[in-house]
Image 1 (cartoon, chains in turn yellow, cyan):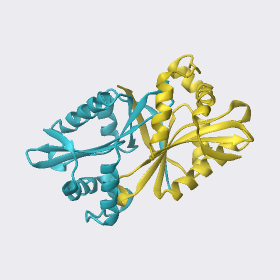
Image 2: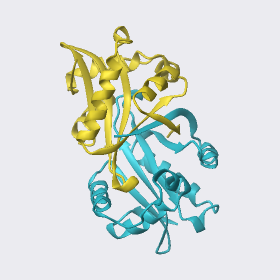
Image 3: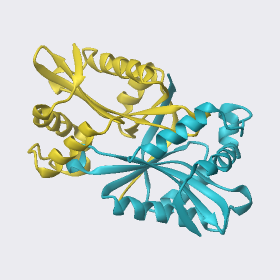
Length: 150
Length: 150
């Protein structure tokens, strides 16, 4: 398994990974995998922003997983930076083989390398299996995650 | 009530606001209000990062509240940017007077002005009153918020 920053040519396969998810389907309806102007603009914004890293996990030449890391400077907790993990996906035919654990272990190492003192994520309440997975990685479900559309 | 980006001279009062909080005290022990090098570095990092806005709410010349906004580009949800709200504090002698609502209303407007499609925050599980407050502002507690130190 290798990890690298996503490139523009990875965007279609990343969108396919994001779309292939029951919770996203329930939330957004049939999730389109087609790449439109907003997706390209979002990729360019992520790619240009040193606070964000969109990562792909590869098996050979195949992208089999993705996640996004956001590094946020903060005055809380002694001025420590925090790392937020979002949009974690493993390709459906590769689930259950430990790839998610490798991805998150890489992410936590990356956070330490960039000097973050805390890692955080939110996970839909319905993803009980994901919560157990993150707890096994040392995460504690200490918070309620709240969202609203704007 | 006026809102503006925090300046370097606001850092001590912002730290005092962050420290004056029961959950932070329980988590971090006696929270020092003294400004050290890590805090100055964190302020400079926030100030230099266009993805982050550290805001103070003022009554006259007095800083009476603070919060931090982080804008994150994303390929999820149609390529929409998301706004994360962190480190929300109202000065203890000003609580219960609607200031928090004014602050969050300003924050949601700011998110719309910057083109974010979703606002998100996490709140410690013990802050039941805060959860009701955020629900009254249209937030839904759809997620579990998980954290771990690095």
